[in-house]
Length: 143
Image (cartoon, rainbow, N blue to C red; front, side, top):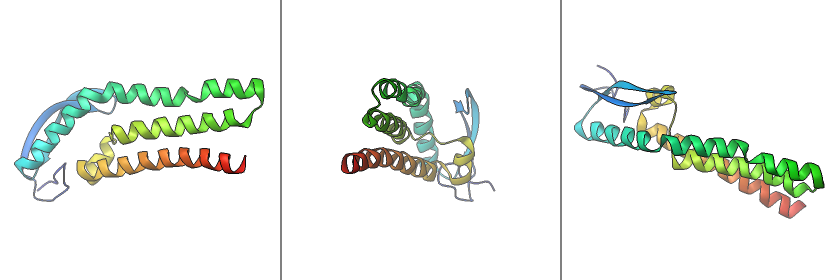
């Protein structure tokens, strides 16, 4: 028998297909679940992914580019605050995006199941946000 894609139990027997994002493209993906409850959770989660993937990508891009204005300000003023803000903004925005939209890689989903992958991904997002806040707190204490 195969594993349930949602809870990772070994006795999965319900097979079904859902149109969803897999990596960088949308395709029909076949899933195996152990119960109707897990099947419903997978269908709901894939619908959530399909609805919010664009928001996730936009937040990741914004987070990745958010340091640029602060680096420009830092270069022109040499104030350390702008350098710290560049790090804070990047960490916090990307962490928020990962926490709000906990879309793990297909490999992580298949290794741990959707339930556990979501928990792991949310924990990573929280850690990034906390690291961003810690950077700002340390700067305010030391600087």
